[in-house]
Length: 283
Image (tube, rainbow, N blue to C red; front, top):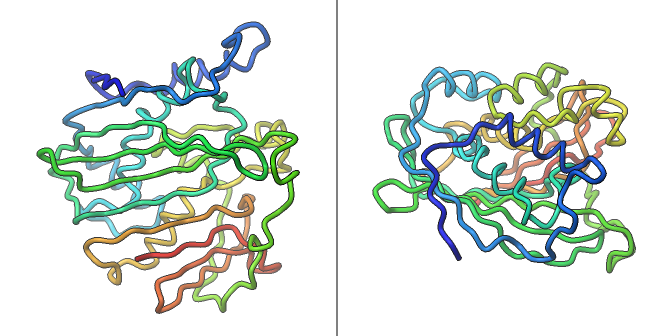
């Protein structure tokens, strides 16, 4: 695998324009590869802007602190992941990819004073019953030691997949008793887009959502994960792995039920119907 060291995190605006151009007939890559790019993108010495961290904490419900939430390095590395996923050699166009799951491993607490070295690569292109999946793997290091790792799994829906589009019967378990009810307002989509850099219009625009088949905007999956972890603040260990499966989209606005168990599982579901939005396990 070829390591490509960038001088700094790329600007996301040009990358989103590249993704949009790639959707236009005759302007995108004539033929996308069936293989993942054999490249690892690296940016060293990324520093934390405390005002940005404060804004992120507020949007996601964390207590304002110099300690980095487990989900915050994902936001810092997002421009690097976007650069990888909008490259011509990436097998799928960015639009239409579904963020199906996310796993984060925190090896130790992180502090805003620490510059982070990030690396991002794609891995494990594989079949799925509804199409194909791949992982975008990100690591954050301090002084050569990996201190954080995130794996985002993306699904490319395709007709004629091995499962014929069948839904996994495990997708809709009975939700546990709620620990709290949250009202999720439409501004969550625009506020999180601003702090995360993920400005996909499916989260911020009613028109953009409709163009992709949703009657109204939906919340970012990583906001949902962050909001759940914020609700567990003070109970999390110093080092852990948290696995999340993103289930059904969370439309904005909504009222959702958060539930957590002593066995370190938690979930987010529609407060009225019980339809699942997120299921997670922490170890």
